[in-house]
Amino acid sequence: MAPHGLRTLVVLALAFMTVVWATDHSPLQDFCVADMNGQVMVNGFACKDSKSVQASDFYFSGMHIRRNTSNALGSSVTPAFVFQIPGINTLGISLARLDFAPWGVIPPHTHPRATEILTVLEGQLEVGFVTSNPENRHISKVLKKGDVFVFPVNLVHYQRNVGNTHAVALVALSSQNPGVIPIGNAVFGSNPDISTDILARAFQVSEDVISNIQLKF
Ligand SMILES: *[C@@H]1O[C@H](CO)[C@@H](O)[C@H](O)[C@H]1NC(C)=O
Image (cartoon, rainbow, N blue to C red; front, top):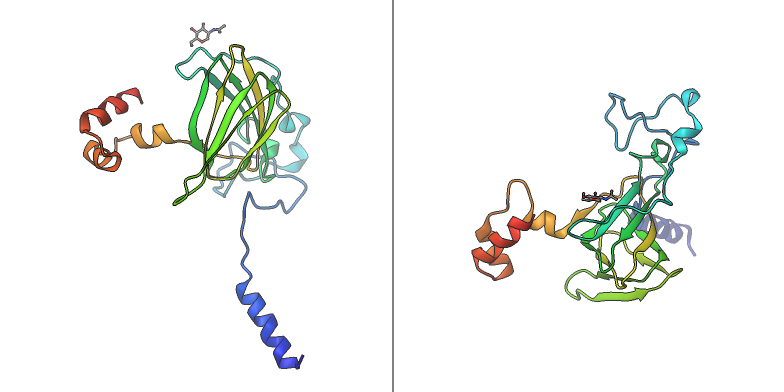
């Protein structure tokens, strides 16, 4: 290839190369334990002085404890995010335990910053996610103990216990702070409310129906 042809190719390749952060940024040092009381505002948390870092900064306990699921949804989430483990800051990873009463539900929600991978430890779960417009394809599966399922970043997903016994799952997430947007809360439980007439038009139902749903949130 002629030298200028090669140069053109390289320039074109560079022009089309874009850096995409699918998850949290990579660390630039061994660790950056979150200084929760720091005054510096950064994306994530500023680092504690590494000389003052202790094992407890990288530690969380109690993931074996069965949680109380006596609530309207029949489920409970125990997070181990950067807020619980400051040593997770900048590492792009976190964990949570999910407990389900019989037939309990974790309602449709998204994580704006993380893909989620779930392992069933006890019981059976029906799980699913929906792809984006225009397909809106619903991909779902019933999982038993030991089964693993992935929920791609940002997509709306849910879990339900499909059994008469307590169910438990452990999930890993590709962010120190995955965030959660429950669809119901975002649409019907915002503060202040989205106008009832907007939601009535959006969902093609009467304002009474919308008001009733808003009362639940
Ligand atoms: C579980 O939570 C419910 C509702 O908050 C409460 O009434 C009940 O006492 C709790 N049960 C236990 C065992 O802590």
